[in-house]
Image (cartoon, rainbow, N blue to C red; front, side):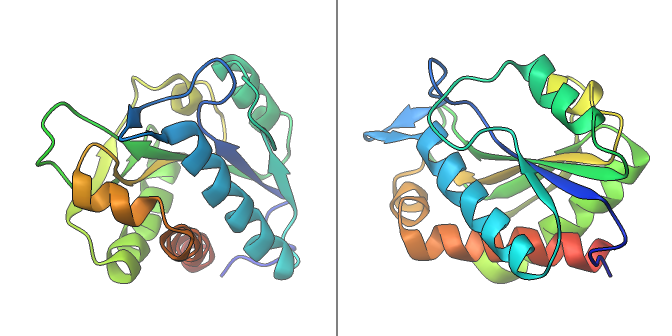
Length: 180
């Protein structure tokens, strides 16, 4: 189990931000949801004495290379990028977690398992994501967590609620803790 001594830092990345709003569906901006969940994850980790570094704390744009650089500058870190998904196929729903390395895969599987248990959504599995810059430019265990599809009407209604964001944050933290 992860404790304050196992890793010197957990880097939490609230995806998108600033000029990059991410997906926008039904007036809900992905970048806003990402930040809300990221701050909740930070709060839960810090309450356990685990050091956290945030890539952003407000609605500002941070280059993908800079996000990876922040993570790579931390010794013994793990990197968790928080997102919400969208597709033109509005029937698609569920949560999925991406990774690019073996150590990232193990972390992704742990987080994905907790997300499914807590959120009770369709399991879209832990998947390879080598095409994502924040994963392939990050040298530590790194994942992208997609917390739900905002393009799906019913899922968007849940994702936009504080209780759901808190539950997603709790699942992410539980996955991190279980993995280590």
